[in-house]
Image (cartoon, rainbow, N blue to C red; front, side, top):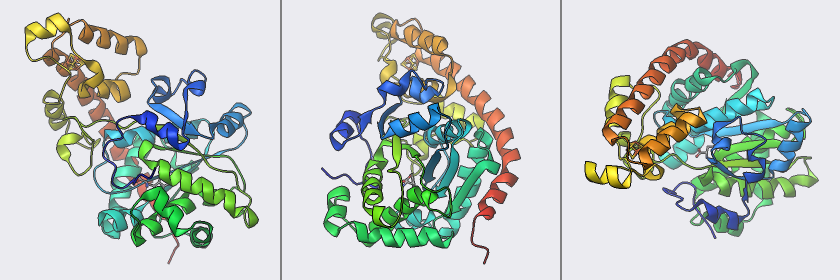
Length: 365
Ligand code: TRP
Ligand code: SF4
């Protein structure tokens, strides 16, 4: 029952996570439907979300913590976590964000220098351009932070055996152990007395991160003799598929559109994306298209069309064969171009704030 979050390319059937103890998000869907990903079922699973629901409903303090592994351009797949972070922050969450430069170095071979630059110029700049409030955010690099964080990562090592690590991650290496324990400290350290103290914590992540969440919850429970902490909660979202089908991956530019991409190049990618259209125009008219397997439609579903009626209109038009893929793609490419032009203006304004925030919590050597 192990799975390796660093190898996973396609989860396929998300329901399989329920076997590991992830629970459906469904019962909270209506209540939190103001987040598009919740409303549309993109956020499909959770662990321990009741604690967060209780805190949010009672306007009690809670922590939102998540992390990013800087390894390439910030693309629309990454935007999903960003939107979730911002949503929780606006709901009052105390916001903590880790730049996993150590993980990037150990697992992807990105130098610490590059990882730092990518984290700031790509991720953080985009987070702020999308609406993150830097004044209300704690942001750190795994390679450069404060002592209580490192102490927690080290002490956590005693709470889990080598065999348990193997049964969670499969093949185990030194790099995986270090990365996993850093992530445990990322998630748990906001609850240390030096920070917020014991407090419900939600970790919004892609479904591939569940092994880390399981490990962290186990360790949090066992650390009870030294630290008082809540088991962290998590929400899980589906991945965005790539433009050519398969995974949207930073290492394959044909699979994604970056938020910093030249709008004209984005337009071209959209026009040549894999659609759910039929082989011929006649068939398209007779059978209708297949939006559920169409990467163009997915961009609208996740990012470009917020209005549900409008989205349903597009879905129905496609299914009934009333529109050709060419016309439909053009319409989506227009939306994409408009979005990028606006967004890139915001990015330009966000750069300074991103640099400042990146400096703020580093150990001033
Ligand atoms: N491992 C995560 C990824 O691959 C990044 C990450 C590091 C993270 N620390 C975290 C995610 C803490 C959630 C919480 O993207
Ligand atoms: Fe996709 Fe649009 Fe074609 Fe339907 S009509 S398959 S949504 S591109």
